[in-house]
Image (cartoon, rainbow, N blue to C red; front, side, top):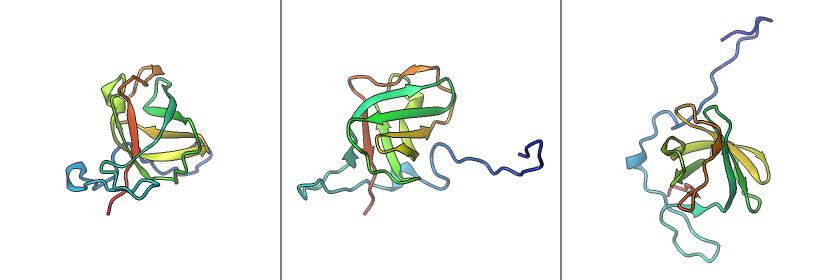
Length: 122
């Protein structure tokens, strides 16, 4: 893609990372107490909003400590297209976004069953 000023813009990665096979990697993490936490480290979520695009913005209850392109596992969302494995883009200490595979109608994606975990592989 090229802007009207002639600047070439590269594609922005969204969704599942290229070459990442979900079934091939078993998440493994340790809790703060040193106990194994299969499935990853839970990220406490305050809100989870879709804005009518493929981008979901997540506000956390405490600083999340995520770095760009870290992997999260999302499940139990109102719209199943907002669930899966994604790379994150941290925006503030308590706000991050991730890109889905499809456009999601605007609204809250948070349900009582929603769980987001930081994926850490051994």
